Length: 397
Ligand code: C5P
Image (cartoon, rainbow, N blue to C red; front, top):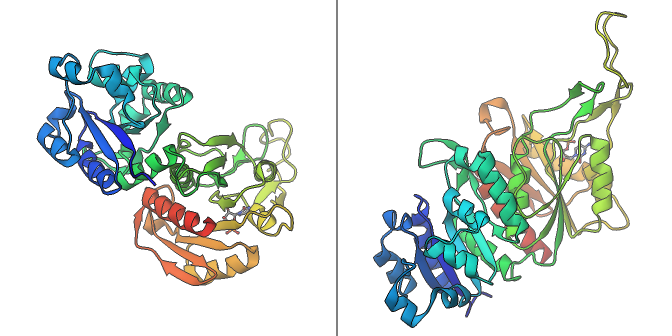
């Protein structure tokens, strides 16, 4: 699939640069030619010798390198590849690309290229979450640059959260997707995510503790395999991944309408923690306290979006996947839920507080399909997402 392609790989200056070495190996195994470029800061983390030995090619490092200019000018270098990959893409490199800077070889190549660009950001959590980086990210995606990661997890700097560079195989999958060769290219997948908010009045609502982390990771993993993802999200705390179409909703009833409007789809994955009830007598104005004693909140059942989509006779996605958050008898309850909802697969997990799964970065799931139950080891939500996306791709193939 990738054989015969040429990738210009720009290695930025971050601790994740060591993973770029493995990325080169993985690409070479797949018959990809790699032209490596090492930034000055990148050279502080990995040596030009290891990069060139693995790539089997000269490493380009200097903008004003007379020998290189005589052999191949930087403009030509920027256009010689089928894809430019920046891994790790540091906050500084992202800012340079977004601002159109050209003050070193890497930024000049990125400005001069007419080739598609994929970046794999890696940085400290705060740097990633900083408004400036998020602004730059929006600019880059708006300019058509593809993004893979970053993942959530423990970081080399001792902090925890989004900022870890995507793993080499996830970057390979994103490269395949960039070439339109991802296993989910041409497929449309709907993913619901996050909690719903059910208003009591204009200022108060019923909610739950879902962060939206697993749904966001899944949407990112599906995009990396080439899928077109409609990401239907309630008010989550984890931001949506780049590259998906985000449809923000608040209530379960809005979520159902939006999911139905997004059909047809090849697969639909219901990772949202949908509220079971809404307030039937929600106040049009803020309910005043103390006037007539305590307010009576009348609850009414919400539509079951998963069951409704799974039970459709028309436009039912080929693969409908539900999640089951349980606190006891996980396997038994999840198998019963699969039958009750009429979905194809259930991804079940134990969300009892001692597991730290709800709102945390790890997950321990049981995948229930028509063939039985598979117990997956505890892993990061990003890894669960990547593995599930691979299974979805295999099922839709
Ligand atoms: O019934 P329960 O809430 O445990 O089912 C969980 C699964 O059903 C999840 O996949 C969730 O997204 C979905 N669901 C839904 N609409 C609801 C309730 C749950 O789509 N009203």
